[in-house]
Length: 284
Figure 1 (spheres, rainbow, N blue to C red):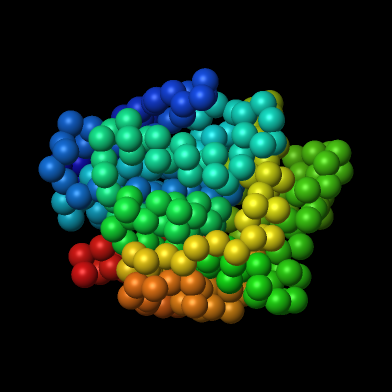
Figure 2 (figure 1 turned 30 degrees about the vertical axis):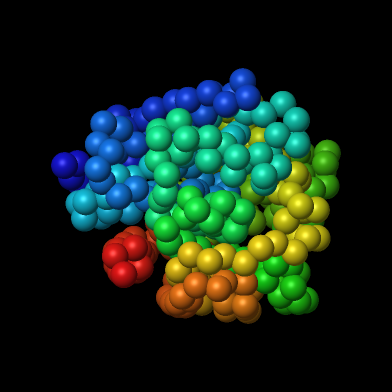
């Protein structure tokens, strides 16, 4: 059993597979153990699979096999050449392809930020692959799209990220409209900016915003039938509580809602609390 893993140890879990010509990276705690229940952990922006290190520790100790992909353009995965490579249906197709590659039929599923959006889509459009869902910070896409003016104002940076040429110029810097300033509450912002110093990496990660305004926000998406836990934090400056609590309307299975006092980066800043919520939800 793997014990007390540190982020520096994550590369020891790294595997790769190829889909549509892209080499995609993922972490896998037990590649040779098909008997363990599987948790699929999906990171958001501006993070990578390594953000899940504390959850991987706790879930592995509890008997789970943890799989955490670097989504296209992020971490150690290849970067797509076109914005449309980052379409949400392509991205969740990559996750399904990974499960098929590993001969895994069904998973407990958790996602944070954009990873939560992907998790909602995976659970909604591939219900047979999802045992349970935990969506952290971001609600069901249709609930988010209908959350009103306060959510639109909180998500102002999404429109900014879509200003091609302008955001490319200012995001890498240190001014008011830099990524460092917009996401200054990120607990590892120096590591984030160091990672994004690699040519092309920052805008590759931003492309998930550019590829998905229409497919995510302008369409109504299916309800989720898997038992679902929604988690939101009171100090989240990017997301309102309404877009999370209204997500209950877009589930048909058991719905549970939990709230914490911290900021947006719950898996990193409140790992012990989150680990307890995940284990309680998965083991119901």
